[in-house]
Image (tube, rainbow, N blue to C red; front, side):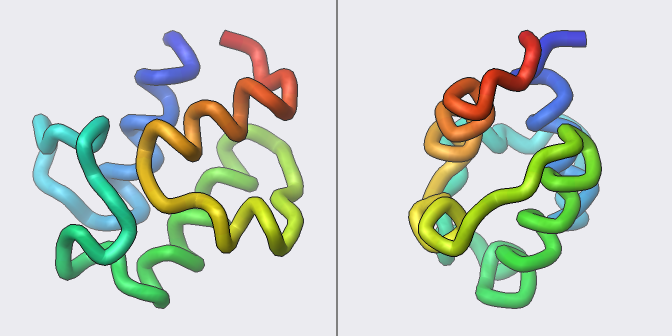
Length: 79
């Protein structure tokens, strides 16, 4: 499974979204589920799934699916 597909699954599960939701265009506070609590749930789920530790700046900067994907690539998470 690709990095993008894995991250897509994390977004769907962590934010409790219906299967098939277009997560690639999601932005922080763009939907009800991605509020501050949802953000921290998402951060924890990403850290668990990809075995990474995000620093405070990364947590704050993670404002979209694309930013999260680029962040993981920057952390050398395998595709």
